[in-house]
Image (cartoon, rainbow, N blue to C red; front, side, top):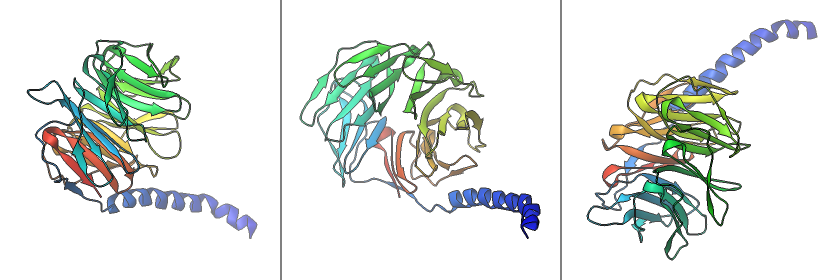
Length: 308
């Protein structure tokens, strides 16, 4: 009997693999979450990024027309509302989990909100900052012309990224950081030493996130490019849309929500992509996904979408 089981095992393994792959695709296609326009707040101002935590959240955008102030919204767990705003355009934000946030913006803007008022850190660069992430050793921000900044909890410092390419997205890894940028740039390192990884594309990559519980990542960019990093290798998945993709957020289950120009919203995993019915044609700039069917999206002209 043992010998017979041994003889059948390759066939059993093949059938198991087929069912696993089919299960991944069926799981993605069967997700029935939908997109809704959030109508609790009427704005005409663009929103560039957001962060949502447990019972709180932040949305930021460029300078409101006819003012010097950035647009900032705060979430109390039930609704978004306009809050006090710092000078200058904001491009990325992370919450501190205690009612405050950190944000970065154009021309090297670095600001902090402590729950009461905004404060500004000294500029270390005149380059536009494009993304921000929180890690175990503080905050990291990236920007144009290879700019890389680190915040240790007290001060910001200018670090060496080893490149002059424009950098657009950054995320934490198990042992450091992963950064994406122009011309298919992918950098992996610990903040001081960097390795250039071959993304397999030459188009700009605008966002990156960790997906799943293992050392796996997803990146998106120009011309509808969607890349997954599995077992140390980047591979492009087929995407029926050639629309520029601006941001991506992944859940622990490996599902990713991707947003882009003209209201594009995609649900993807490492096997396929599925376009969702979008209630808007506005350009979408930021997304956060906390579960397979729970997320928020922001875009131009005050667009806020709820994914549930």
